[in-house]
Length: 182
Picture 1 (cartoon, one colour):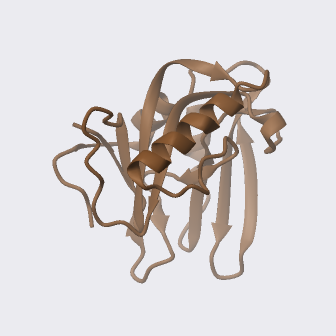
Picture 2: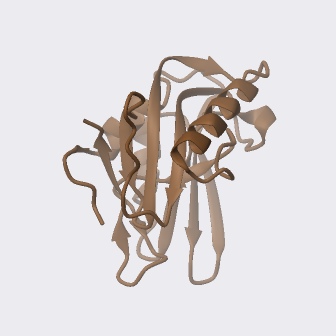
């Protein structure tokens, strides 16, 4: 189910493209780990990509690992707590083939093990705390409609799977792989 014709990138490269860098003093990256067996949820808010990646290694077999697409203000996860964003996206669940993006190709595609996520990297981060989140969600909604993506996954509080982790919804588990779209 892996899409061919794209160059695979590691998690560090992926996050350096979709998160603003450097982060501000009160800005964090949300890591959410969910253990499928008992539905235990753990949340961490980290100050850098390096710390985020280090923390992902604390979770072993059976943990689905997610990241908040928007950076967070300290340790909150509501829309009011979303700080900045550097991309727009579309979630394609249960899809084995990507749509023809034609004149609007994404920057990055992630094979989530059960579908795909397409990301369009922005030239500069957008500050969300001033209400600009409505514009990002409107763009996500339009992209989702245009490419027949999941209309329920457009919100700035969204968490999606971390490249390099595994999707434990399946037996055997499927690796989450990020690629630059070409």
